[in-house]
Amino acid sequence: MSSSAPPPFDPADPLGLDDLLAPEEKAVRDTVRSWAADRVMPHIAEWYERGELPGIRELARELGSIGALGMSLEGYGCAGASAVQYGLACLELEAADSGIRSLVSVQGSLAMYAIHRYGSEEQKQRWLPRMASGEAIGCFGLTEPDHGSDPAGMRTHAKRDGGDWVLSGRKMWITNGSVASVAVVWARTDEGVRGFVVPTDTPGFSAPEIRHKWSLRASVTSELVMDGVRLPADAVLPEVTGLRGPLSCLNHARYGIVWGAMGAARSSFEAALGYARTREQFGRPIGGFQLTQAKLADMALELHKGILLAHHLGRRMDAGRLRPEQVSFGKLNNVREAIEICRTSRTILGANGISLEYPVMRHATNLESVLTYEGTVEMHQLVLGKALTGVDAFR
Picture 1 (tube, rainbow, N blue to C red):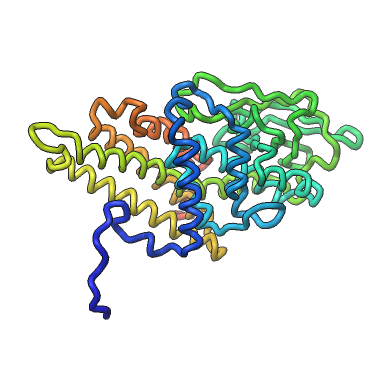
Picture 2 (cartoon, rainbow, N blue to C red; picture 1 turned 90 degrees about the horizontal axis):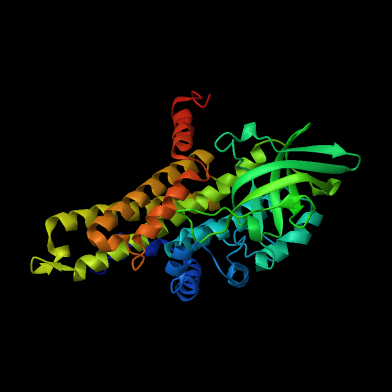
C-alpha cells in the first residue's frame, strides 16, 4: 500500500473521475469544452430567448472541423473516436446547451449512423464525408404526429412505381429538419419498414419549422412533409428491413444523452455552488447554512454518480458489451436526476434562478424535451421491467 498522501479534495471532481480518463480522452473533452466556451456560451442566452439558432450551418462546419460530427464512426472523414470520447464531447456540448448537443447527436448518431451502418457504398461516399465536415446537415425522420413511442404504427409509406419509390407521409419533432440537406426517413413498405436517404431538395419534400417551443429553443425543430416524393431505387438503405434499423440508431443516440444530461446538470450545479459561496443572507453566504449544504451535497452525489454510470456504459460500448437495456438504465436515471439537479439549483438561486443571466432554468426546460425524446420515462421503465421480469408489458 502506498504511504503517499491522497491528492487534495477537488469540488469539481470529488470522486477523482479524471483519473479514469486517458490523455487523449481529456484532450477531446478539453477541445470541445474550449469550443463551446468560445462559440456558444457568450450567445446562448440570447439565442434561447429569441428562439433560434443563428448561423447553424457555420456552427456545423466548426463542429466538423474539431471532429465532433459522426465522431465515433470509422472512415469517410469521421474521427473514429471511442465511445467514451464521444460521450465526453456530448457532456461538454450539453453543458453549453441541449440544443447544441441535439444538433450533433442527430447528425452523427442518427442520420450518419444510419447511412454508415445500413447504407450502400454509394450512399456512404456521397453523404458521409460532407456530413462529417459539417458541409451537409442531416436529419432523421421516425416520429410522426400520431405515433411517437409506438413507431410500428407509423403511417408514412413508400410504394414501388416501376423502378422508383414514391414516399408520402409526415414526420414530427425533427431536429435539424429545416436546415438539412439530407433526411433519413423511415416508412412502411410491402416489404416491411425501410429507411430512405432523401435529398431535401427533392420535389414534394418540405420541412416547415416548428415554432412556439418553450424547450430546446436554441435548436431547429421541424415537421417533415413528404407529398409523393419520387426517389430512385437506390435511395433505400439496403442493409436493413424492419424496426431494428431505426431502433438501433436510437440506441446509439440515447447513449450520448446519458453523458449529455450530466453536462446540463453540471452547469446548473456549478452555478448554484458559485452562487451559494457569494450570495449573503442573514450576514453570511447562504452556502454556510445547513439546508443549502445538504442540497449541494445531494446534487454532487447524483451528478458524479451519473457521470460514473456514463463512463461505465462507455467502457462497455467500447468493449462491444453494451446492451440496449443498459442504455435505457442510463438514459432513465441520468435525465431524471439532471432535471432534479436543475430544480434544486433553482431553489438555491432563488428568484435569480429564473433569469437567463444564469443557465439553470434554460437547462431545466431543455431537459424536459430530453426526458421525452429517444424514449420517454415510461418506455425505458418498461424496457427495464421486461428485462427484469421476462414479461413484456408494452401491449
